[in-house]
Amino acid sequence: MALLGSMLKNGIRLSNVVRLRKFNAVRQQRKVFRKLIRKAQFTKFGETYQFDDLLRSVEFGTEREFYQKYKQFVPIHDYNKMFDGWWKRTLAGDPDVTWPGKVKYFALSSGTSEAATKYIPVTKAMSKAIQRTSIRQILTLGKYQNLPSTLYEKGCLMLGGSTDLNVREGHYEGDLSGITASKLPLWFERFYKPGRDIAQERDWAHKLDEITEQAASWDIGYVVGVPAWIQLLMEKIIARYNVKTIHDIWPNLMVFCHGGVSFEPYRQGFEKLLAHPITYIETYLASEGFIAYQTHPDAEGMQLVLNNGLFFEFIPFNEHNFSADGELIDKPETLMIDEVEEGREYALLISTCSGTWRYLIGDTIRFVNKQRAEIVITGRTKHFLSMCGEHLSVDNMNKAIEMVSDDLDISIREFTVAGVAHDTLFAHHWYIGTNDTVDANDLRDRLDAKLKELNDDYAVERKHALKDVRVTVLPTKTFYDWMEARGKMGGQNKFPRVLKKGMIAEWEAFLAKA
Image (cartoon, rainbow, N blue to C red; front, side, top):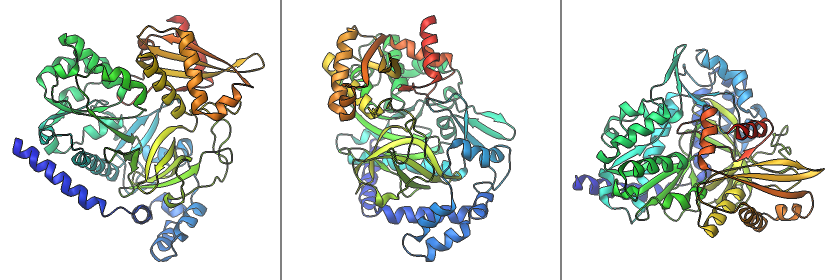
């Protein structure tokens, strides 16, 4: 087994050397665009939006002709526009709608804000693309000099949705994590935990209990999942076996691959569960595709996956392109990868091998290294607060929570904030989830001060229209109870960082009954 680990690590290092020589963002994106258009040109979508002309442009036209025509021919779609116009026919079993053939798998997603379930097509091409990117991410571990070759012989715990998918009208549906786990390659099964039997469990609480009971018999080297649920699982395991840290059960745990939300608010509490430091690797896997991942130890962000079934566009996230409520205006400015600037925020548009075209995914990102195409996720187009011009992003919130947690030496597991009225002006009401003892007024003052440091607009508005900041401290369990009440327990579900409109009343009604 030691020989296997050494061979894998050496092979990984060689692969990384080869891959470094091939990085050219614009060339890769043009090649992906050509493949997508060629594949989909005879679909109903492709025939409607002149994909044959687009294909000629990308193969024989000038350098930017294809993109100018793409913007001219194909409108931008949000989920409702994509589903009502096209995907509902795909869901009904029609072939060749936005991608060749029939689609047999649909990822169920409602994000963090909408109550209605979304049906995102997952084609065979997308499943293969996600597998390829997952393997590439594993290959990046060769760049981490602190990881021994024995890591590659250990188990990998992937905490996700059930692989026992719902069958309906000729197709399968479920969490993307359940779909991808059900299609794992045979060679990976010897490493995969919790194994096929437990992975099929649909009851989330029961799944965590089953994993906890089996945990002591596994030799886990790395874990994959959303921070909140991984932390909750590790706490259950520590309590079940009456040990001090998770390393008493999994002494070889070396890597945590996380995604879905920013890890920083969880770091303080998470590291209290460890006996020694581990390596953290961030990923950006959405229901629509594997978008980006951290490629080296010193990365400031995650590198966009530019050469595997995804074509990216970027909309500057400003008042010229979006309303105060985060709604996209008609005919916004859109850019290709070579036109972006470091430090600016962009809303992400994607076209993919699942038949997604110029699709507004809803996330906002910022480039931290344009040469490497490295980004950080800053929030959602509709998950920010700007009641009076404070322009408070989720990125600001995460950083402020992290800083306050460090100052007070407490673990803040969850939080959310709502914009509310204050007489004729405005206020922010924060709900902070922690099991540590903390003075709410002190927490409020520190949080307010940190946000003023991080965001100049916020600092200005605190002197004018944003008249108050309120903080309610709650047990962490309250947040999870609300998610359970809404049917949102599971590997890909996250608590919304910003409450807007009807969700504020729903949350307050829940707290009144709690």
